[in-house]
Image (tube, rainbow, N blue to C red; front, side):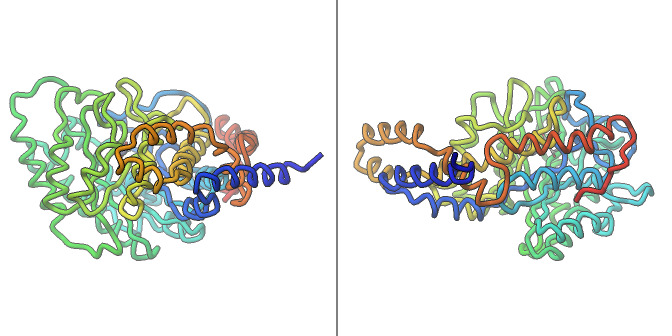
Length: 434
Ligand code: RNT
Ligand code: ZN
């Protein structure tokens, strides 16, 4: 019997021929895929908890549901989980870190007093594992955010506190980017909004605009740090009006030439971000994507290979936008193994990118230019049943990660060895696997 490696290779050889017949070079597609980093969000690993140990509700309209045991309780545990997940995903990636994951050595450091010193553990770890880092100020899970307002708050003292937090985070992001030699995206998302119909929508938006301008006053070298702003339509508890709406931040990003962050779960349930990418990139230098999956009123289900995920990836590839779009993940699910959640989401984004890279784009473009929409539709439908899975499996094999669902066994083993002990509160393994 042929070894499974030989089978994967021979299946790939057949698939390569099939793609070659329609003018697609699978080797080139895989080489390109290997160069696309995805910023994996730390917060799936501990249900957006962070390590301030202040005992605050997450708030801000964010809610993580589920009681799966074994979540990370310390930076070392989280790093161990992250590395386990990354070891099951092809390619080199980035870590997307929140300010609430600061390491303060047990001391209480206010959010507006955080410095790069509190992230040295993360920076060193990222360097060891050849990962870039992206960053996020944390404008929630804090007494000064308890009213649901931060940068748009009516109280100038509270606005000041959050402006200072934003400034501190920009400095931290720049220090991270400089020390790792790869620009760190600092993404600003604030929860501010009203549960019920406000009578003044103008005031909070003017306050937000001024707070942002103050926060962004200091210029930084774009080789070290890039600012992004993230819009949202509604959240839990801010159903009637979110101050940082799409129009608000689109205008802000264009006039200030910031990155706009489009989160796939932040729009009307039938509205998609795939159609926004080519519009927005006419006016802003770069985009940040928060790849997520909205389900009814939740914006953050684990990413799977939906039509919309494929449409997003196709936009990036077909329009040659990969150099101007940073891909990050944003979801949190505590009802399944958290490491599996990362692996599923990351691998699905890569599968979507691979599907896009395996299109005969020149041919499709030619059909469209000749208004031959019949051929375009026929070809697009044929592409769906080409042996993409064989190409993906070969990529996993060649990248040294488990092929097919075999990665789940690694996650199960880690669960036995590490997570189960954690759930008992007797984790002698903590920090030993990295
Ligand atoms: C919230 C935003 C934001 C957060 C993270 C934790 O609606 O999507 O990106 O999910 O900052
Ligand atoms: Zn987001």
